[in-house]
Image (cartoon, rainbow, N blue to C red):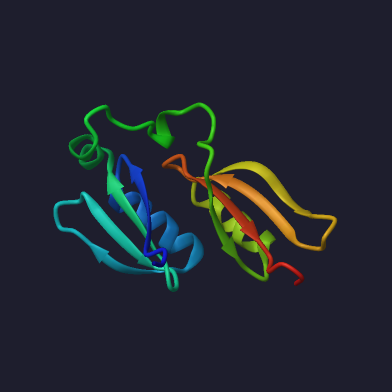
Amino acid sequence: MKLGYTIIYVPDVAASVKFFSECFGFQVGFLHEGGDYGELETGETTLAFASVTLADTNFKTGIVAAHASDKPLGMEVAFVTDDVAAAHAKALANGAQELAAPKQKPWGQTVSYLRSPDGTLIELCTPVGG
């Protein structure tokens, strides 16, 4: 068993793929022509986006959509970088909302938190011990 995908349900798959690609430098691996699904090449585990419309067909009772929630959902995607401040600034310039500015933690890691335009909670962090 291994973790293969993290799939985030969003209102506009192409817009989310574009935001994450442009802000964090991930290559687009796949974008379905119908607009309901897209993937980014992020390493061993694929970060994917699926439309809220597709979620409605998969789950009879629907989902709690991140973009429709006043608060971030209780999960995040975390991206490791050597320059949290630069990645944070780039995300803000591309429409992200700041939740916590870059800050060095007591264990030495620099961490910031953002919310993407589609509502996804994002952590930017330096490597642990870095």
